[in-house]
Image 1 (cartoon, one colour):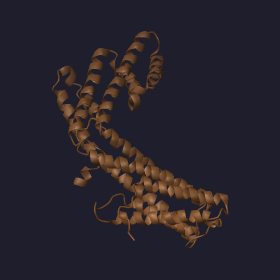
Image 2: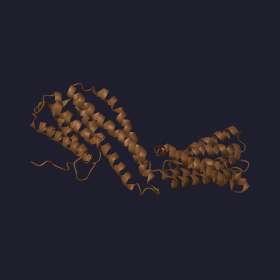
Image 3: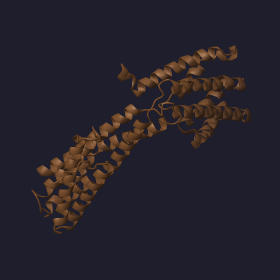
Image 4: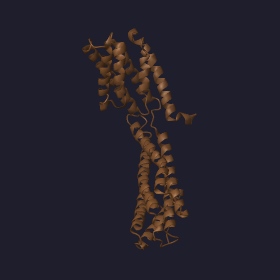
Length: 359
């Protein structure tokens, strides 16, 4: 049950339901001319319940502004076009409303301008001032309740989604490296076009991870829980951006291996050949990607072992590069670029040997 309550959609559902109920009850306490239209308040409450406190407040005031703009536009145009057929009046109002919706200040709430304009011209022209007070006023009341509930009732930090997406990206990135390493060992690398298609899943995971990290950053604004979870949010930001940098480097690295295949260009000089050295380097990097944290501060752990293996593989790759003759320019430069990408990737992941072996 606790795990279910951590799901963002469940939390939002609970907040929206509570905000809608509370706003309805509050609206019923208002004077009869307003309480008779209490159903507008839950609408505002639902509009204002968003994944973050900052987004809730932003949606609330932008929606109300958009509604007021639509109402004002409808009233003004209907007054000017009294002698014009209703169809033309409505068409003109909608056209002008869509023009107003291009105002960047309104953002995702812009569509409320045309909705409110059509609503006013169809049901509110008999007493525009009263309709504005009922609709916009009660919507604002409900939105205020929605923002309040979002702020007070487990204000979301969106940490669960971000952690899950970072983990998913980490697994795909490591698998990406291991797949190329296996291809190097078997001599069956995919064609460049096939590899690009296989990498699409990683691209989607990266986009989702970036979006989740951005949401966490927004969730920290005006959030009373932000200080409590500051450390976790900071780790999420650090891990997300490190993986993002590594993914770019790995994309270049694997593209070079797949397209130029330096292990087949006469560069074999050490161990069992360039292909095996490249495979060990990619497997070593995958091991570090899979283990993002140290389990202990003062004793070696699995991450230390992964880093040691990756650094050793990088060293063998660098030795191969230095001892190779320039048998093929493209293959040689591709091999050098892979070595640089390996070094930068480990650096981005904070892969440092903490307990160097002594002779």
